[in-house]
Image 1 (cartoon, rainbow, N blue to C red):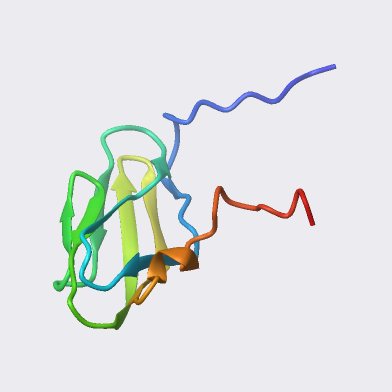
Image 2 (cartoon, rainbow, N blue to C red):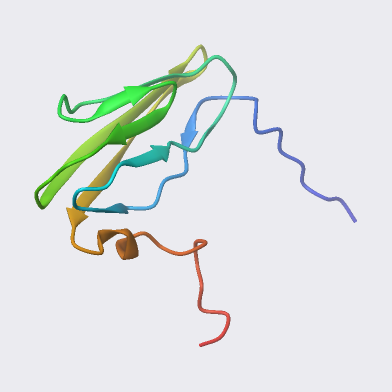
Length: 106
């Protein structure tokens, strides 16, 4: 029996984000963008209202907002772009999927 092996530091970038990231009004938030692929990888976003540094999105907003951004990851092997919605609202942190797919107890 053969077991498939994959080195996360080879090939073109692959972005592994959920479709939506939730944050709460008035609180600082950060989101590390999960990307695999050959290093170094340059990560950019198409929104100037949020701050991106070293692959981490930072921010704090005092009002409800919804951002539809595109994340682009590029290395010497290629480019990938993926949309992400950042939803800032009261108790907005509950929008983000908890630990990924969590229907084990359903």
